[in-house]
Amino acid sequence: MLEVLQEQQTVNEIAAKYEVSPVMVSRWKAEFMERASTVFDKKTSETEKMKKEYESKQEHLEKLVGQLTVEVDWLKKKSGLK
Image (cartoon, rainbow, N blue to C red; front, side, top):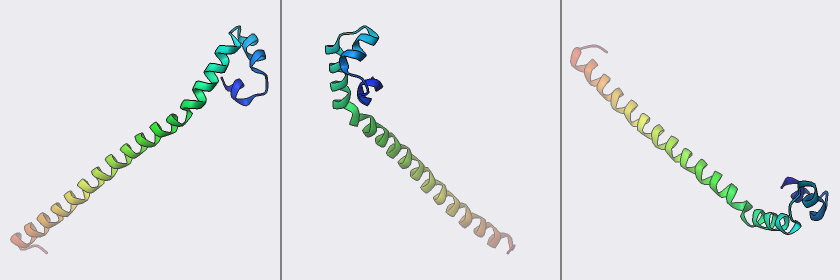
């Protein structure tokens, strides 16, 4: 397929090389060109999903650190330690 996209050979030459119909090669190329942008859409959505999961986990950890800091300070105060 890459050869078809690079257009260094004609569709007929590529079809003959791989022993397939030139019509089929043309269809594959057209279908690929039609759907090529979806490859990047999927990657972007997966990246966004991973980013949101990371941010959510980071937010949870920051809250936990804050809660633990308050608890440690309270325990130090109650025990008389500073």
